[in-house]
Image (cartoon, rainbow, N blue to C red; front, side, top):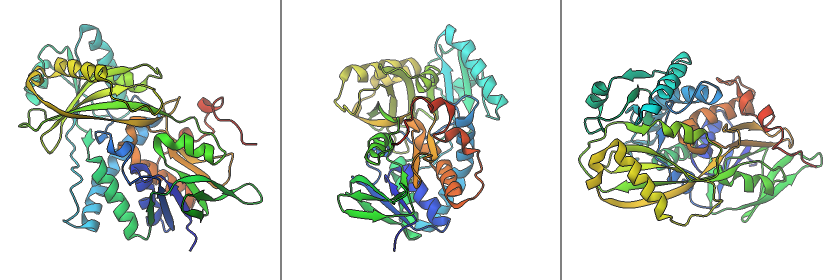
Amino acid sequence: MTPDVVIIGAGIIGAACARSLVRAGLRVTVLDRNAAASGTSASGEGNLLVSDKGPGEELRLAQYASSLWPDTVAELRRELGADFPSLEYERKGGLVVATTPAGRDPLLAFAESQRGAGVDARVLTVKQALRLEPDLNPAITAAIHYPEDAQVQPVAATEALLASARLGGADVRVGVTVTGGIRAADGALVGVRTSAGDFSAGAVLNAAGPWSGEVSRSLDASLPVRPRRGVVLVTTRMPHRIFHKVYDADYVGAVGSGEAELQTSSVVESTAAGTVLIGSSREQVGFDNRLRVSVLEELAVKALRLFPFLAGASVMRSYGGFRPYMPDHLPVIGPDHRVPGLWHATGHEGAGIGLSLATAELIAAQLTGGVPAVDPASFLLTRPSLAALVPEVA
């Protein structure tokens, strides 16, 4: 039976969309050229954040997503049973600090603007911050506590969403590479050509993360998504001494920057397994995944500004991955106005884990003619900020 939607990409965005579309009554096939959850979703920290977003469209989407995670985790637990691995969902909260006198006032002003948009952003004294994180460097100059920030194990979350979609009838095919589109006489996209044959569909959803630009070109509808590389250090296990996601306020600037050159900032948090994750870096180097020791050195040095005790910790590994970067720093969620039948859910950069559930709900509502919970206009390809970057299709 011909599916209503073929989804390209079995990362967390594609997985969440598959589940939402199946729950909306649509027939879904998911295709990925590699294993599920093996790309960007496997190389992140599982952050579900509102703390790093200023007032605007992305923050509203993040707040909506934040409201969806607790119930979704509970639903997945009921659907999949106790034998399915834990998603390690934890609303641990975030702590954002300034480490220099010059960073204090901008951090406080940023938090004030977020409070005006409904974010729970609590200004702390240094003494209060040290109560939350006793091993934090006492030389910090300001601290904001964000109780709404959370974390999830991203691979487990992706696999759970896919498993739920399968229970609803979704067909998930891995090791299948999309090579082109199938067009109707009127130019509408009615399926894809792949290494495993043709797949017809009522609609095609491009959810290929940093590879979405490549996929869109194969479908003759160019999209300005570029890979942005990030690297994380992982320590050996230790007793828990870090209780929140803790980061330097420089992280907010790095997230919103469009610079291609290397940028690093201090981001430190513990996992349920007892390891400590140390980030973060951002650079545009195409799909070059070669290890650069200088980047790791920079991450390690900056982490010590937050937690000096980490000087005695052992690093057991590092990993890197590519985030789907959009030039205007907003994801693309919705139909492609140039090609009937083509849809996109991509460009979330480092926020894809957190925004996945909200993205899926927006896609499902638009595809089925429902009313989205968040106005999708700011995430469409027709938005003014992309006017010069989205070429028309001949």
